[in-house]
Length: 293
Image 1 (tube, rainbow, N blue to C red):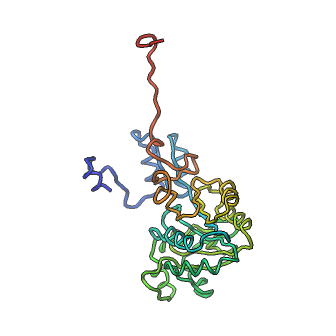
Image 2: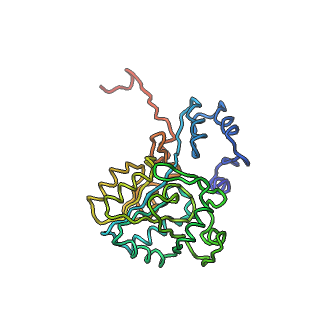
Image 3: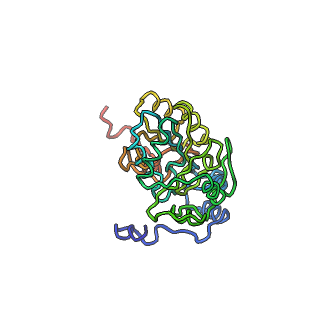
């Protein structure tokens, strides 16, 4: 980033970082007299520190974006979009698809299409092993767990190898069909391990999507040709970003609409941030002179 800034004519070391960041170092930075605005991405602890700083805060919160697929969806396109979105940067991006909720009548076809695009389906025993590996604190309905940080952002084949499974190095996602109560569904993992849940109908899918998103109002994705159901889910989720019939990254302007953003500020209500978010609107008024009326 610094190299690009310098090449564009910017100052040296405009972007800096701390080798071992802590809450204490964050407090010290946030309290510096020359800092007027805080842009915070992280867990509740650092966000709380920022919120208590007395300064303007733009805070990005957690997400666990659900991806709903109903029986009207174009499954060939949907599968490609889901794999592309969920595997982007090994699922590190906060808006990436984190769990798939699919209507049972099209679940098998969706899985087959996903396999054609680089997904590798695990069996029941392999799912058990990978869950024990990547989940450090199991969550469940209404409770978000915690992921094993050692495997955050790792390649799918690296995670597979850790459970004694050899998969092609080109594998983009490890696909795990699980029950709705499974910890993988309720935990934002930030890695290419994708839980898939079957439900009876699209209304049940939307209801489950609302639950497993935990009310973060961050991001949600839906693949459907039914405008009424797309509208229902958009209203039910009430997220900062809602993607219809595309990969998650389309919500950041890549192949979709709008501008790119690096901070989705749900906790502070800013939503999708842009340059104007970080500016102060000012007004300069002159009375009497130079007035025409």
